[in-house]
Length: 367
Image 1 (spheres, rainbow, N blue to C red):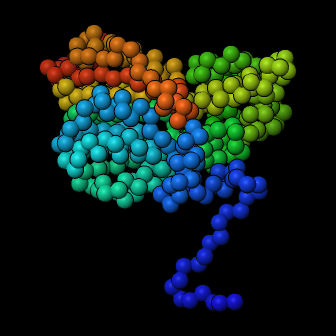
Image 2 (cartoon, rainbow, N blue to C red; image 1 turned 90 degrees about the horizontal axis):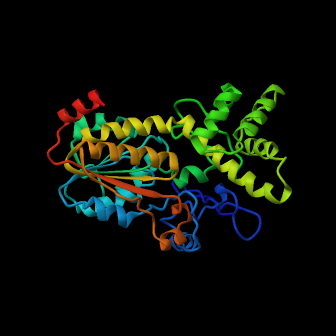
């Protein structure tokens, strides 16, 4: 056998998997290397799926049409994620101006920054900050005000698909659900500390779960029996058990929908998403330049209600000169190409040209 010469990189065999196609996240080595296996990734996208480890940006055309980004402008991508929206906004800047990109996820932000840097977007035009968009006012104090801002409130596909992050009931993994796994408490910890009434309320408030009482009762029962709920599939089993009273022909679909809602509700709770969004919406007028344009992409009714309410109230107060009269949805073609776009809703607002931060502070005090 030929020996490896000094300095030569060792050969790594590809991931082995059963059958003709990889099923587990870790086995999808081609999808996890989109730059190297572009043809494979494109085939997955053409089938209406999102490749593992990737995120396909949603409503790109609609967002860019509204933001009207011109070279020399200064703006914010408040939720960097995989960087798809940022890449398109950087193209619009055409080497002039600056984009400030924020993300709370310490794992994905490093990958995305490297990816954008490799595309030629360096520090001269792009600043990536590990910040929750809750702190957009602090960013504005140092770099603002901004002429355009985008916030995509959806969880990135990379987070959903990676079992280690615990965002999906479909794959075995730790029940975590934190956008920043290095801060706060996990979903498993929250389930250990919540009482039945609090859990029932949380499921109803965060995801309109119709079987909130039954699921909360089942979780508390498991806890009293000393049975831990620390993995994604274990929680899914508890939800399925709670709905065992349903007719067999209805049960499978009901369990699937309830699992999705329970995981959504827990994710919102663990990351304080509604509280963070409310604070973010309140701060927005003070970070935007006169005439600045804001686009927000939401993915469930609770988020959309908060955005709609804030935009309308601030429009009536004269702080925004215009807001979206109706929600904007992805086209049928986009939804066919990317199934995760189906629940997306886009709303926009324009900062009044003659309204300044001092006026906004007065409004906040008297509202």
